[in-house]
Length: 319
Ligand SMILES: NC(=O)C1=CN([C@@H]2O[C@H](COP(=O)(O)OP(=O)(O)OC[C@H]3O[C@@H](n4cnc5c(N)ncnc54)[C@H](OP(=O)(O)O)[C@@H]3O)[C@@H](O)[C@H]2O)C=CC1
Ligand SMILES: O=CC(=O)O
Image (tube, rainbow, N blue to C red):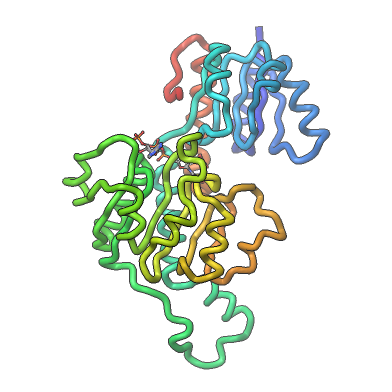
């Protein structure tokens, strides 16, 4: 019997064709309208497997998908899935670790460098015809080399950020993490510290911690207000880890020098968000892993996981 699978993702064409040869596929590039969402729920009612991203699963959706055996997420973060409900139904949830680590760490460093040198502001000046003479002190940025890097959540991506900072820019590294990682003292000459110490000692703070009920709202005004002069906050994990209202207030009153953001409390960012009017914020549209190579590798890994579970084998990367 051919399995029914629901795809909500812009898979690369050859992979979609392969899946269509093996399964009965209902494909949505994204759920953009109420009609899409209705059609998605109808397809899930008959689905044996889901592969995709950016779909918020809840109990009602799972109740309406009684045949579901596997959710193959095309993401490493699994905050969109109710883990207890999934476990209670014996559904296998898989994600895509490792293959996106470097691309996402690169995005973190891209934001870090753009913020340090105020690259977005400077580019807007050039395009806006405001580069009429050489720029002066009002437009200077800050150095990166030798400054202290603080990593919040020293997992795969956090360590790839630390590697870039330590080996590429000679940065002393401090980090905050749930479990102890003494081995990183050798790897990056890094020090594990409390969140308060990290915020007070770092010049650049890069947030790479996973979102969970423990980390929602972890970074608030109290921590942001305790930062060094000209400290920069980069968030490449999930917007909900940082209290966005507090971040905006600290950027507005200058308590925090600059922010570089790839993720937001609500995505896409609302057109009336106060962040859009702040010069001291570099804003990217959640593109951490968005390279051809990395996204293809994520799709391949998710499809391998789906094929294996439907074929009765263990997934390569189950959560
Ligand atoms: N912007 C983007 O496009 C992308 C964003 N991401 C985000 O990055 C996150 C990290 O990915 P990855 O590095 O692969 O995941 P990992 O699981 O390797 O790293 C997560 C780290 O967070 C730590 N952590 C979890 N909970 C807490 C807590 N309560 N307090 C302190 N530390 C905690 C973990 O600690 P421990 O060692 O104890 O488990 C772990 O070191 C993803 O969950 C996702 O949200 C990922 C890819 C792309
Ligand atoms: O945000 C992206 C992910 O893979 O998680």
